[in-house]
Image (cartoon, rainbow, N blue to C red):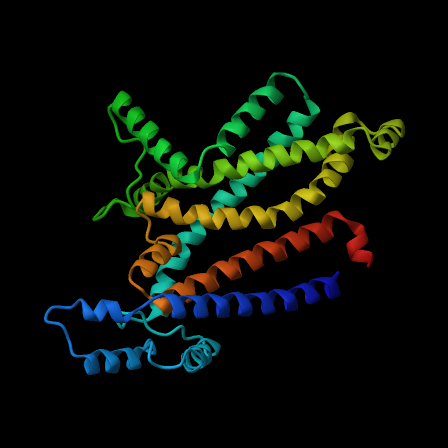
Amino acid sequence: MGRFLARRMVSYAVLVVLATTFAYLLAASTLSPRVNYEEHSPQPTEEQVDRRLDELNLNDKTPLAERWFEWATGVARGDFGATVTGTSVNEELERRVWVSLRLVTVGTVLGSAIGVGVGAYAAVRQYRAFDRVSTVAAFLLLATPPVVLAISLQVLATTFNDAVGARVFVFNGESTLGLDAGFWGTLWDRVAHMILPTLALALPQFAAFSRYQRNMMLDVLGSDFVRTARAKGLSRRDALLKHALRTAMIPTVTYFTFTFGVMMAATTFTEKIYNWNGMGSWVVDSIDNQDVHAVAAVSCFMAVCFVVASFLSDVLYAWLDPRIRVG
């Protein structure tokens, strides 16, 4: 198992380097940081703009390979360079990364765990009320775009707040500005602001995993090894949990990596809609501001998150399937 995970880590490291490099080359060849300075009033001279862009390693008159080499050398030292405004990309990265990780981690764990549980139980209760209700709910969520879902949750929350006459759900920003409510009050305020954006991310995950896990569970319920376990005296509950569910989760764990990519894309819309200053909203603002280094840094972050999800998938896969550990 150790050799298996080590080989995977090497391939993942190569993928991160390639993904980040391609993201930089694409951003550097399509975005134009020069526009930000030419629109100043009074307009600076071309020499002044060139000098400033040279300082930031963003001058489009410099060969792309030379700019990339200087940038890559800095990244190797842990420095992602400067933004178009001259601030440190690293500082902005450190401030925003935990914002997105809170949403992505909680949304992923919550959505996938509930989805697996609901999907497995729906398979056991095939064609009964629970199965039919969960199927309809899953298809409705899968058919709803992330933007529409996030806005719909805001509308429902506003309607509920108006009905009860209190702000039960809040959805503007990460916390209430200027709040002085002590540790527990501040903690609850952050949790309250996190409920709706987390739901906006978790619900599509729940829908996808519930359908996938239901299908995988149905494939193994009638298998010989499940009937053998029952014939040897194992209770129905233990046979389902220890044998059927564990086997049915193997392809679901692999599927986790692909849904994580969708989650990262959904985070971009969710953060903009709920006014969270995370990595998703930053990449949108960076593209609008023609900020090459910021776009490359966000791409690197997303690649690392995808690799971590893939590595976690490999660990779970090896744990669920003994053949991986033996091999």
